Image 1 (cartoon, rainbow, N blue to C red):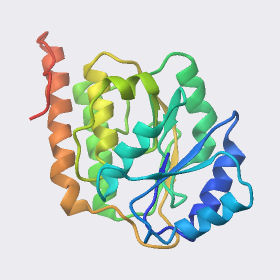
Image 2 (cartoon, rainbow, N blue to C red):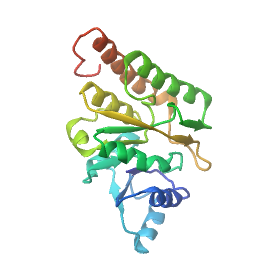
Image 3 (cartoon, rainbow, N blue to C red):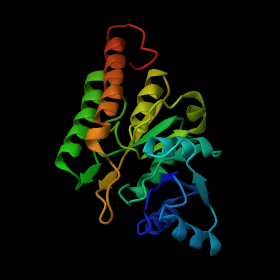
Length: 240
């Protein structure tokens, strides 16, 4: 599932990279906000040329990253959904390992930049630092079974998506929300090493200062869940 907003240059290489690394049949569901998106002509050219497995999904929940992710995940009918960015930042070579963990029973599999074997190249220093701090601290202090809770590059079992409600309304914190909620619900989470690289063209859609309070909401929920577990108390049922 690929959310887009004006990605005419990178969407083609992203779809080609996906085809190169997918080790089984798949559907590429590209989610867009409206007809002004400059990604659409490129996608429709590919459809006209007979590209199979490509599907366009109109954002049904209003504009923005969180709404696009929600619309895309709701459109999935396959057993698993993998969120992939359209800027070639994600390590699609990790897909077979992610699918293998899902086949082995994981409900959610994280592409992890911060576990042994993972890496991150480029991007703003403050964003990288806060992301690593959040992931590593929730892993070691709260016991969250992944080192990289903030990465959007994740695999979700469809049954998980049907069970958990997405409350996020801002941006890419959706992945953090679903990971922490899945863990709080006792679902099985795995991770595989992933290499993230900053985009080489276009403008990032990530808005640090606008979305930071939204990430902090789920960070507090995850920390509270972990600490309550360590004290033998029931997990909180909802974030506040």
